[in-house]
Amino acid sequence: MKLNKEFSNQIKSLLLKYDPDIVEIIQFGSSVYGLEYARDLDLLIFTKKKKGYGGYLDALSNLNFPYWIDIVVNRIDESLDGLANAVLVFNKILYGDGRYLMEATKDTNKPNYKEAKAELKNAKDILKLGLEIKEKLRKEHFFRNAFNSLFHAVRFASMVYLSTDEKRWGELKKRLPNLYQKEFENYISTLHIKYFYDGNYPKDKVKEEFEIWYNKVKDYIENLQKQR
Image (cartoon, rainbow, N blue to C red; front, side, top):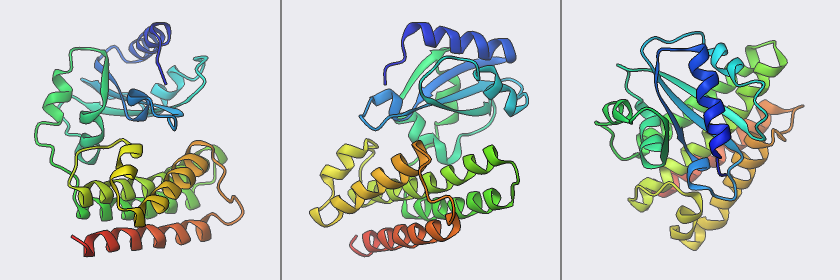
């Protein structure tokens, strides 16, 4: 995905209009390195004072952009925690000079199996919220992100197994032993593309489907860990 200058300027203008305290806007994730799978635009915002999260989404709601837009809002004195690796390796500064990004990621370490397992727990928590919420659109958002968190657990575990900072899915798949390549590809195509990007998960049995994939991912992580 290539974010052209027109869209980049519109994004900056709309976000700054809603929140004049914004000091940096950063594009990160798959839309930066342009893999064939990229179908969303991830944005990280650093601001002196956070506004209502829904307002950031609303600010871009009328933008004629053909991709799903996800926004992370960070106050300038907050760390990025588990998101730091993903942002630091692949990013493009749309607004600002990157100093706040560097400060927020200065203590970043490589992913580890503990982080991969924590992402598994995050996925369960996200699913639980989705099951409790009544609003259809919000429920959809949580369900899709629950499946996507399972994919990220797979990605973290694969990086640890390979002892690499490489985050590009295609490269990770190539470096994995043949035994795991097909399984890894299935996690990409199903969890990340079909269920998260396209939203084509089984809507009549979300909980049951999630449990199936949760157990698959859990086994995948444990199998990788046993071999190191």
